[in-house]
Image (cartoon, rainbow, N blue to C red):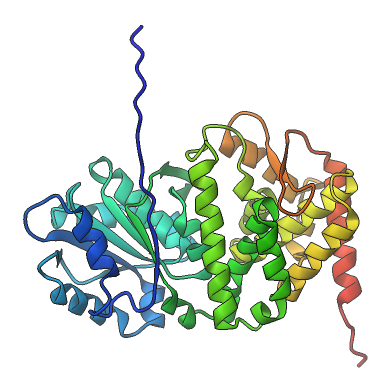
Length: 392
């Protein structure tokens, strides 16, 4: 047997800026110039989420102007290629083929760059296309939502849905860089803007108590989506997510634990049951609430701590109940199927991350389904006790 270690070093770059496509802003230009190994300008292909283009009507025109201003360093091969985004884009294999066709037609090589601008689902799609063409093309992600700027967009995963299962086809691929242009947040509708806050709460619970205290102190301001606390929340959420990926010892998830997916086993299933009418952030809020009350049920977490967290999630604007939790098939709650699907996606043993205290995590390999159902029932009662009925 021949056995050798192959050490591989990745540089994970996350930049924060405003107005990335203002010609005076050199963030993108300098990222490419510092790494360009070719003589002459680097080839760049821009993939743009059509929803982002509609919400930012001057964006598509500003991109060619930016590249024209920096033609000594970068060459834009064509106007931005607009593709549909949102979760449905990950169910459309033809969009992957369109990305490959563009890469082939414009002769994008492994020394070229793809810039993907969009929400988390769009970045998953574009990242999969970039990672599989020529065995990997340098990708610069430009997340445009609070959810992707603070969580998914700064990670190293991408993929599309297949067999009706989320992210069944995909790769682990460290992007060349992530550029978080905070100006995009201003164009988000409140519902989408709020989604990233829940992932910030999640990551604070599993690894950063001081961040949790910040979120708690600014809960009302975050509910109002005030600019300064929202931007700070995105930055610290991104920092915590990247820190975990870089230092956990398992960036490509060869093991069975995924602490960054606290609350996600139920969330992923809830998204599926609702046909994605429940947003990812809304589903994660409910999933976290289930796991928090489950932890109380089995004696892992004090009830007072759980109540404080649930109150914070409600304060920033999330409902902790969805009627889709009532969905049954052959007399069995469909949400419970999320446990096996979560195990299957990870491989190996079922591993669910719970929190015994704020800023700490605990991984468990077995769950008591009856206790999960009691937690769901408690959420149902909690929700209906808060509903105010107006007499007719």
